[in-house]
Image (cartoon, rainbow, N blue to C red; front, side, top):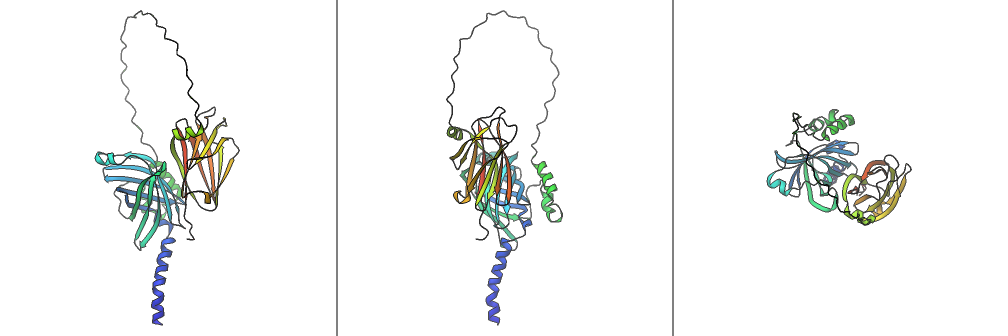
Length: 343
């Protein structure tokens, strides 16, 4: 009988560790995380609200030498996968060699949330440029910590998350504060100067030679895709067998027309935006693990810029994104597959 009990002890312990790590209480993703992305030190603060994450990231050499971004993301408690990206640069105190080595490029990271020990929680994954998945930035290695190098508005939520600070209203309110851009001081009003009096000088008018106007060649939609900068609008986690995308004109219907590129390939063009949805369905089996959908403006309509409301239906979840494209930039949406929780 003793032998039977001993033989069962290890499997039970192993099961409990796997169970606690896979189905760990969702509140534990909320907190401060420290570590590195490749060779760059990072302090990340994540706060969970539903399936969404918000917070802030600090890339730093020291407490006084850093860059800070606001952060958005998603957490899947079934697969323990985490996606987050730098949304907006709010503080740039980088200087010296650190500033020269760290380009101010926003990153997007994907990681597995795991707990190899009772008091040890890790985020292990990879990072790429937020606006270009092809440019990888190295491995992500973060560990949850009780101490934070940087003090900010999120500390209150983290410290009081289990006693009421997880209220969505509180999180949204603090997020609005965090996302405020610092306002530049108003220039001081200068004293009105007395205008100098000058005598008019008579001169002969010179007739400029007539200039011929040359029309620039009209770009194809593929050339527009290549020439224009891609700017991230949002990231959407992908699960299930298919996703449905609906495109509407986001403002007054003014003849906006768009083309869509998936992973650098033109998939739809001449989409006229109206108040009726233009619907596209994609099988997730045809997608890569990380996908880039780019909305290119074929024209700007009668009221620039070209704006669209995109609604994505993924399983039982609905995501919205307001997209904007101009003659210089195109809207980018990244669709990232999440692991099968049954695996």
